Image (cartoon, rainbow, N blue to C red; front, side, top):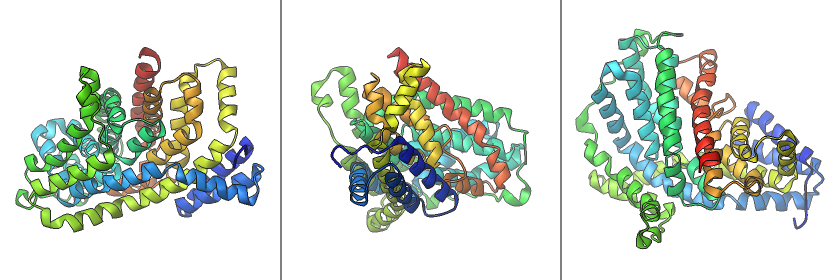
Length: 431
C-alpha cells in the first residue's frame, strides 16, 4: 500500500459499479466491496494491493462503527419503550390541527434529534400524519415533506451515525458537530414548514381508509417527563465540553467524555427512569439489531472510501475547482452532496466524503469544524434517491406510489439545500 496511487479513472469506475449494483438490488455492502475491488484493479492495483486497500479502508471506519453500536443502546430505549411515541403524540396534541404541518415537522425533528434513526422517526409519526391529513385536508406530499424535512433538520444535530461519521472524519467531538448544526437545522425546519404549507392542496389526499385513527393510550406509554430523561442526559453530557469552551471554564472544557460512553449511559438512566430496568436485555438487543444494517453499510463504505482516498481523484477535483476559479470552500458541501447522492444515504455519504476528500478539503484552507458541518449538511440534499432504503420506507409509511414519492425529491432537496447554504455561509465565509 505504501506509495500506491490508483488512477482516478479506476476510482470513478468503482463508484459507478457500486451504484449500478445497488440499483440492481444487490446488497449494498457487497455492491460497495465489488465496486472497490473492480475499481482498484482498473486503476492499476494488483490483487494483493487491492486487499490491503480494502483492509485499510474498512479499518478507517472502525472508530465510527463502535460509536454507532454504542448509540444503539439509546436508540433501542427510545424506540422500544415508547418514549419516542410519547414525544411525538405530545407535540402534535399541543400544537393542534391548525398548525399541523409545524407540529408534524417539529415532532419528527425532535425524535430524530434525540437519537432515533430518521426512517424510524418517519415510521413513528406517519400514522399520526395520515390521520391529521385526512381531517385537515392536507395532501400526502405536504405531509411527507413535513416529516422528511423535519427529520433532516433533526438528523444534523443528533447523535446518529451520520453525525458521528462527520465528527470522526475530521477528528472532532460529536457535541461540537451537533451544536454547529443547530442554526442550519432551524433554517431547515422553517423552510420545511413554508414549502409544505404551499403544497397542502397539491397531489393526492389521504383517503378515509388510509387514515386509521391512531388511538394513543397514555397508560401504555411513559409520561413525557420520563420519556425525556434519556435524551436530556445525553445532551447535557455531550454539551459539557463545548459549553465549557464557550464560557472559558477549563474544568468543563477538559471534561471530554466520548459519545461511546455518553449514549449508552443516557439510555440506561432513561430506562431506569421509566421503570424499565428489567427490559435492559430486550432494549439493547433491539437497538443492536437496528444498528446492524447501518454498521455493515459503513464497513462497505469504508472499503470504497479506501479506493477513492488511495486514488488521485481528490487531486483531480481540487485541480478542477482551482481551474474554474470558484472558492475551495465549496469542495466540502459538493463532496457531501455527491457522495450522499451516489449512495442514497446520509451516513454513507458522509463516510465517503470525509474518507475520500477530507484531507483535500482541509488542504484548501477549510477548518475541521467548518468542513464537518458543510459535508454533513451537503449530505442531506439528495440523499433520498430510489437506490436507498429511505425512499422506499418513507413512501411505504405514507402509502405513496413510486411516482408520488419521486415527486417529493425536489422539495426535500430544497430543505437540504437550504441547510447546506446556511452552513456554508456561516462556517465557510463568515466565521
